[in-house]
Image (tube, rainbow, N blue to C red):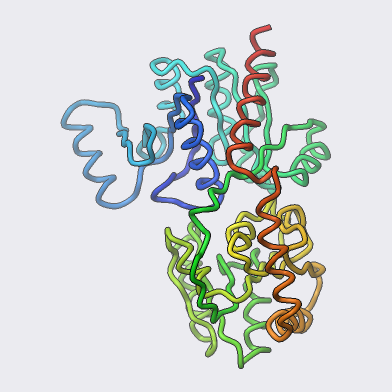
Length: 359
């Protein structure tokens, strides 16, 4: 099967947030199993963008370049050129299926439909900020999503029922063999992820050490403001974003996920759980679906004092911590989270959609 994955944002390795990592892992597995996969994404910033722009102009090539660092071909278009490049790749690569997600996905889907190529739009959040235009109404257009919760939200909003394809997590990339836990860890310190509550939590527990890890998709001004707030907390260490989260989880006693918004899933939960790290999280969105029994869920309106009590209960009760740790590992072993099974399920969904389109 020829698969073209396209989106209007940066992609791995320049951007490594959950959506990109899950797609990257899926494409790697599909490629290893003999599928032909390509990606179209936005070009990297900085020197690489300048270098390739100069080469493209000098060699009179389209304003895009490709690389093979991910194990499959990734075409990186200069800003504003993703949709046009998708059309060019459809004509040359002749994919059996186009997958698109997030930014520019309605426009990318429209290009695929005009070329009479089946397309699957992957819905990965519940805010729909990427939905800047109508979705094509045609049998060529199909939907997938990343959790049962997201599926239910799509049903409520659009009256449609997408197939669920869980995020693809290669657990060996996160499993820690030697853990030296010292911190309560919070990943992606921004407002909607619960930054204010996490800061209050740290203030309530001055005898505990915290590490706040910057995410991958923060505008620089907001990121700087958040960093200054975090660094002002005496017992909080601010960590720069990293492509190797094992260095973070190796020093984690407990992971806190105090999200305020309806997370569609919660990939970071599985990343921590594979090493037996207990998780304390908000009971909101798809988080309970990801967490299973490997942690503690608190109501969305739970005050910081309740979070402090939960953290202390895990850190002070060896029996509770051991039980949650065992349940955390067991949660990552659920069959529906097995990455190869997810890839196999995706191929079934893709083949069924292609079959319906050709009938």
